[in-house]
Image (cartoon, rainbow, N blue to C red; front, top):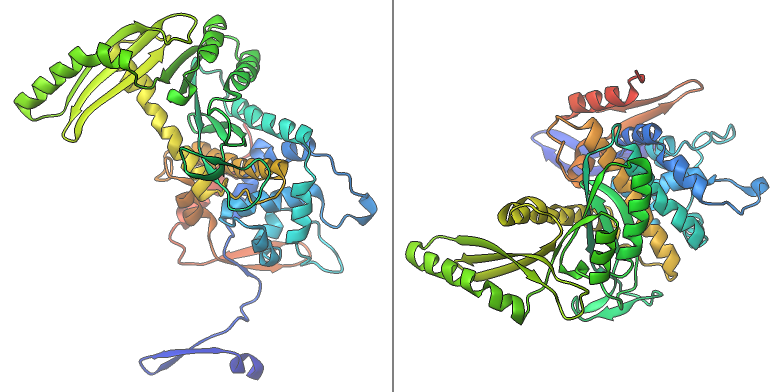
Length: 446
């Protein structure tokens, strides 16, 4: 006791009372809510599916940390907000993470640590392309399994974004639009479900591989849901005639933005003049819609293009959309095309909150694996949000808020021969929500 007092931190007094702090509280964690994610994984079988994709070449006689445990350690850590492998140096001793990763108990050391940063680094750098392809399919299978009944219609949102790099990574190139060295990952979402996260070098066209990925996705989805109507959606970067022609020949609808050019500017001019006149008269924002048949010089044929002529206080705003859909012009633009902006929020969750841009490995395939690890963390958090937080204040929350509300919870952990007990703070403000989510996850199947 004397030794602890001597090492205590002496803060300023509160009136006449001393304020003393030390680090003798026992086995504590600030991430006890990770047990909810463990139960989500047990429901959807994500970690087992990933582990089955990745062969383990190590000699079983010398394995201390099994592969599934390391995958769980890495994915749960990302979901908890730890972006770097260096964080694992201290996280490997976190009792909640050890429980979530199902660290096999060692009778000689019941508190044996999880894998070190160097061990996890070796895991990242031994993943081969074949395993990455299999793991990418897991995202699609998780999407299909999330639906108990086939939907009538799905919209697949395609988008590319920049992933800035600051070292000498393989396949990093300077991008003129983003004005820095980066990768150019391609994402495909359906609502909040992530189906594709493909790392690409940035020296390519933004729509590179979109047609091949569309083909693979459509084939697998129709195998499961033969009658589903599929719509592909993207910005002008995906307005490529070969992709549109493939969609048309395979009964897949599309709605893509299309860049401005002199021909389209001439065709929208009468609408724009009407919008300008109405704005001058009323001083209010004006929106007018029209359509035209248009074919760029490289296209194989003409297609329906929706035109939006908008006059804002800041000036004119012209937009064009090419589509196979037959909705009215305004309805198509507002109800079919504009909602694609929500996909950008999902990408922000990936990159800003789940560190999908932490691609600092030298090897390109290792960086693709890191992108997938972030994607799997997103799948777990979205499954919690979509199913177990439905009807709560967190039903539409971003993953960062879910993390702070339900995962970053302090607890004291006590271990005995028969039980592991987590003692949460009595004053936890979200204990009612936590109890309800846990009850839903632990409820026996009907």
